[in-house]
Image 1 (cartoon, rainbow, N blue to C red):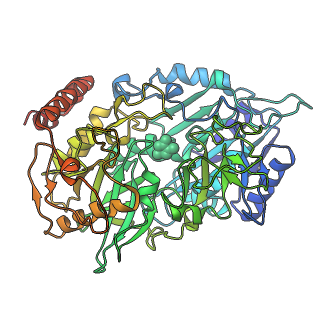
Image 2: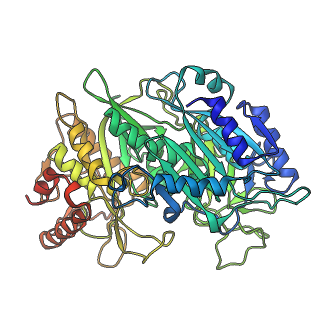
Image 3: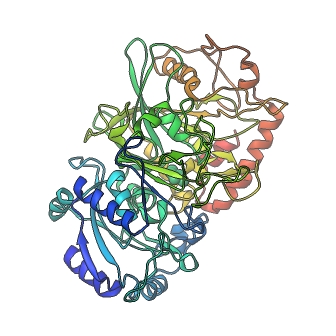
Length: 575
Ligand code: OXD
Ligand code: MN
């Protein structure tokens, strides 16, 4: 794809009033932010309490990723598979061209050259996002490496083209709204063969920051399949034992399972240290040494604010002390931010995310309200977070939110069993998601909304990647959310999850006693020093009847993928 030619085509189609090429500087970031403050699209927070930080409030109809409006338009429908929306690519392109025709009238088209991954990494990927949303530009500044340096490097690299519009052209003199969007015509479309993305109608999160879910997961998963690597919805964290042994762990958790908190865990066992490489996405390649090496393609955190507190994630609170962008959280009368679960009572005079005085009993911050902040601001950013070769992964964890049946931790006996653990990953719906609370939703590898091709082929890719002479990471299933018969959580979670990590370390080093179960290898014991009243037996129990029922459910789920569900996993299920 030729950049000049594509730009000219998109300019002719979208018809913006102006074009602005982003340089990625601090000066540019604050200039764009201050322009937004002037026209009421952003609120500058109190510089004494929260320096260089801003609050955005979205249109209430534009608060989340929207799976129903997200399409994978591969040439063949079979290649999108049963878990993705699909439309014939030619027809979809016609539809998009109609929507995009003149959609940026009265607005600026920002050209955002960006790179997913460190600039010098052979595993990074270059891209350009065209957008009429200055809010998207500000987010891209923290979430990616973007600007002049990338533009210069684009001369020697191919790139993925992405065009994004909020879908609200302005007539001459028309006043803009503070969060323009066009929910009736929302479409987030991926053309995997072209590596391109078109996103229309939403200014929010994964719909608008094209580097994140669209490129680094949906498009990258297709590239990874074609080139023999992994693009995964996984955090990466580096953990050092009191003896000074360091292992990196990658972990996949569906939404609302504490992924960001786990990536930045504050250990409760003395002498343990956790350093964060990333909290959402891992790109992993086999190294010449046979090990799996991971980079975080992102450069920042776009995390859910509610529930983030001194207890759950003290390191994130430190990171957010300045240079942060907040979306849909509540505003305090002294110009700072507040959200449910922050650990302090709501102050008098709180303004809710809707911009009106907060009424007790209603959400002050939207349940999916967010912060955006650079990874570098994290006090526990891993020293190798910028390493072009990445970090070596010793273990992969799959975790969901399950009140019953699934033990606190199990180790897979084999790569094949580990792939099955990933493929059958499940979690209970929480109040923040659509559907019945408590209902179990299978979310294979936590990739259900993010796999850019047929999920059955994706399972086969995982199996294939485990073949040959490799030092395979060990695979674990974890569940921090098991409950007793009174409905209380059996495990304290958060910083105490280090106790499970300690056992995993012992296993990696050939120690760590285990016992067999149909769900995998269970620990014989865990370090519970300093904790009281933990029912380890209940946490680790595998009820044979309940497990058999679980396996029946898994078999039923596998049928969705018809003949694309790999035979090896079918046999593993029948063991
Ligand atoms: C996210 C998600 O926002 O997974 O990271 O939904
Ligand atoms: Mn995510």
